[in-house]
View: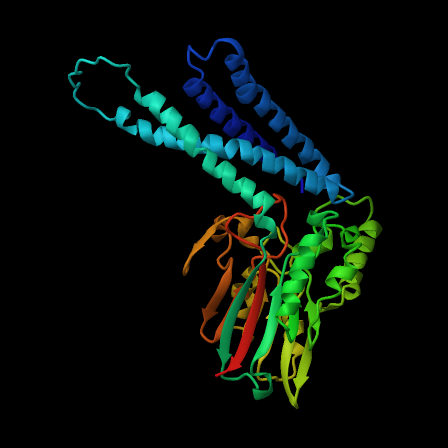
Amino acid sequence: MRYHLVFLWVLVLLVGTIDWLLWRILITKEVKQGWRKWLGVAGLIVLPVLFLVGFFYFGLQIPDASSPQVYNFFGTFLTIFLLVYLPKLFFLFVYGVGRLPDALPRKPARQPERHYPRITRAKFLSQVGIIMATAPFITLLFGVLKGRYAFYTRHLKLSFPNLPQAFDGLRVVQISDLHLGSFGTNRDPLKEAVELINAEKPDLVLFTGDLVNNFGGETRGWDEILGKINASMGKYSILGNHDYGNYSTWPSEQRKAANFKSIVAANGRLGFHLLRNESITLSKNGETIALSGVENWGHPPFPQYGDLEKTWNQTNGEAFKILMSHDPDHWDAEVVGKKRYDLTLAGHTHGMQFGFELGKYNWSPAKYKFKRWAGLYQVGKQFLYVNRGLGYLGMPARVGMPPEITVLTLRRG
């Protein structure tokens, strides 16, 4: 996806403003001497120029990338950029808030006689701002080193009056958004995730899309790991927006089609039954439920390959129905109140890989883009669960939004 020129100019303006303000605040007369001056020049002039050159470079490289390595290099570059500029922004915020009283009109106060060196408000705020600016740096660094692999298992129990008795207690494990290319050759993290999944002894494992970032080659070498996921009633998957290879400019339609074909085949190779706008019937002790899977359906610019009408028509009047749809926006657009799916499972948002959760309250920038972005939602008797993803994309970090394995126990009640 090619960078927009407007975005690049906004970035230039933002970076230039941040570093100009910091130069005015931090580079005092005392600092404009010797090595400290040159350190300021490097940090506030040379480094921003290098970052901006890097964004222009990746803006040209990513659309024509032929391997996932370019995406991973950009993710590392973006992380370094944020490690540098988030503390700068935090410092400016603390400093700016502290200087607000200086902007308010007030009567001149009589200054008491002083017999000790006076610390100005500006100097004090600079020192406080520098100390507090370490918080986003440490937090993001933790998200890179630990957070992206801190797998978290969430357990939920949902009751449905129309769930057949034979399926009472059905254990469904949902995973989503693996983005295998982001792991590179590091196989160990997902080995741990597979062990956690199998420890739950699931009846069903449902994978709700985005197996890769863009390329079929990302699936090589994962058979021995993901193939070991066990489920007594089977493993099923759907396609996500990244599984179509739409995030590159391909030399020919044949190459793009071959790439897509290899991603489709990889689902089967890893032991998943891929559902592409189709429904199947699951049977147990003479009773049945329906499991449906649609291809990706999202609001533009995300593709709309999902055909829910076709998928719905393949159900056979089962009393209870589960739908897998990658993008949670699909639920509000075509499912709730329109098609009687009792439980819909989605992913896609990753919770933006950043946020926090305190009890029942949660927040993430994702809430400003997606109406349903993480966790459980209910409208009437229909439920939607949005998984936060097991892998990561772009920035190789997760802060306050750990990679998720969801265990749903379905009860008749």
